[in-house]
Amino acid sequence: MQLTLGPVLYNWKPEAWRDFYFRVADEAPVDVVIVGEVVCSKRSPFLEPHIPAVVERLSNAGKTVLMGSLTLMSLPRERKAMLELAGDDQLTMEVNDLTCLGMLGGKPHAIGPFVNIYNEATAKYFATRGATRICLPPELPLSAIRAIAQSLPEVTFEVFSFGRVPLAISARCYHARLNKLSKDNCRFVCDQDPDGLAVTTLDDEPFLAMNGVQTLSYTCASLLGDIDKLRDAGAGAMRLSPQQCDMVAVAQLFRDAIDGKVAASESAAKLSAIYPLKQSNGFLFSKPGAAFITDSGDVRRIVPAA
Image (cartoon, rainbow, N blue to C red; front, top):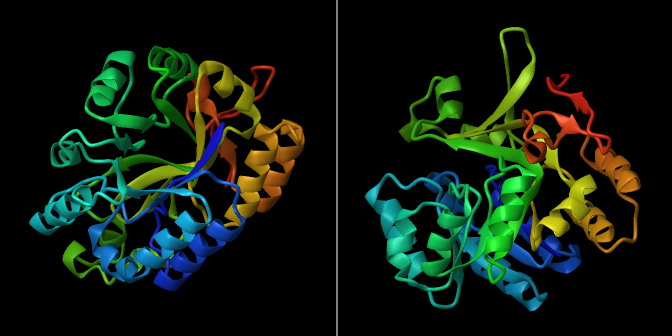
């Protein structure tokens, strides 16, 4: 089973973003890396000067590099940027906005977790349009993953396996609004929360996180203990979404567990030490996404503690 490192969803400092990928290239046991700004196009100019060096370093290290498209295109300049990306024959695009499909004209590509693929027929449609790799939506239960993956054995299916779960994207910016700024003059305040900003209920219970125009889960998805189930269902890769922690260590934990070098229970304890945010896997078992289901089927928790 492969390991994929998804794109950085947060507004990290450009040099920190570059150095993160340099270390991934040198040390992380991942097979595929998605590069590029997929959440907010206003952040792109800060990253673009570093992308050639990042792609070269990752490629030289033997990683397969994909370029992620924006998740939501709404401006002419965004459409122009995605047209240029789709026309680059040196790099493969991961499509997160369906508008990009027409730009690709049937070229081989990947589909990101932001595209709603909930059944075999939909997956087959994308495969006939050139998709060779599909990261399924994080909220899919194991039964749906199995049905889709086994219906198209020629396509590599990924499952979102670590990180705050991307739930929604908006044309409006929550971070700008919170700071009483307009979206056009946001001053990039989302960089103050490089791991997302927790959102609480009126009862002060954390339940979501915001990241500029994006809504994520408060809990951190972790399918580290469910590797055998995913493998049996036909999943070909597990996706790790970068968080503010030692992602090389996280990748190594998943790699060792996949290879059977470390017991899942031992890996889970180490993961909690590396990234102490509450873990969840409820979606995989058709339970509330914030829940964590044990091997015995018990719901360990639904509402996360602060």
